[in-house]
Amino acid sequence: MKYFVFKVRGEEAGYIEEHARGSPTDWKFDEGISLAKDFPMGGEVSFSKNYPDDRNLYDFQPNLMSNLLVSGRARKVIESLEITNAEWLTVVVKDHKGNVVGPDYAFLNLLGAEDAIDMERSTYEMDSIEKDQIGLIEELALKTDSIRPQAKMFRCTLERRLILIREDVLAAFEQAGLTGFKVYEAEGWNGMEL
Image (cartoon, rainbow, N blue to C red; front, side, top):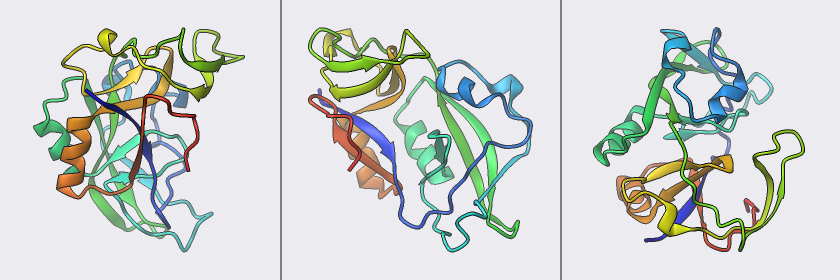
């Protein structure tokens, strides 16, 4: 089974710079913990006024927080794949003028993590602040036998901001024509996002 590093990317995207008002603190979105009880009902996010010409809407919408902001269409695909660690924090996406352009979006909060990184074979530097987390990857090696068979889209225990997807998930995303993401083969990935 092949795994891929999953990154959100989109040209001239309506860029989101902050979570909905009343959301949990930003760092909690990277922890793999449930946020549903603290997330505001009827939350709204808006395109950044700092990028007034960027208006494109994607299935995975680029945002400063590096979270997975997902369209209703992408959510249906993900739910059809029976990804069981998905928590949905629903929001409405508005443009620069406050008009609703994405009525059925949600932050996809992936719960838990997989012990997927082979620390012996990988080249990396640990984070200077979060001492139990990798801060920089130069060459990624995986321990695929440590990844649970039912894990299809997940965070890595030692680098919770790193999202990996299985090859069958990538195939489903491509078949559905989902937009706003780029992938890199995980084994041997050099940490670059070109």
